[in-house]
Image (cartoon, rainbow, N blue to C red; front, side):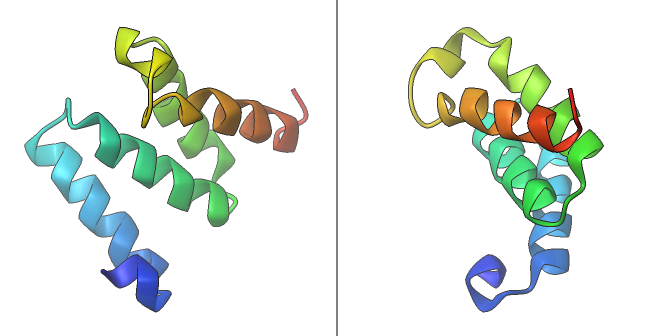
Length: 79
């Protein structure tokens, strides 16, 4: 996978494309938010994570980690 090779741009584009094709592919949204956070694209990550934590599925893994990541992003944004 591109992410494993360190190509964050390619990975980010791939997750974004997956979401264009299937907007409710929630693990892809989480992966995109993880990459956005790694790139310090906090507003974009916050948007994805805010959507994810509102889902009933976010109460269990793998989406449960969205709650913790959102807290980290909010801290980075000074909220």
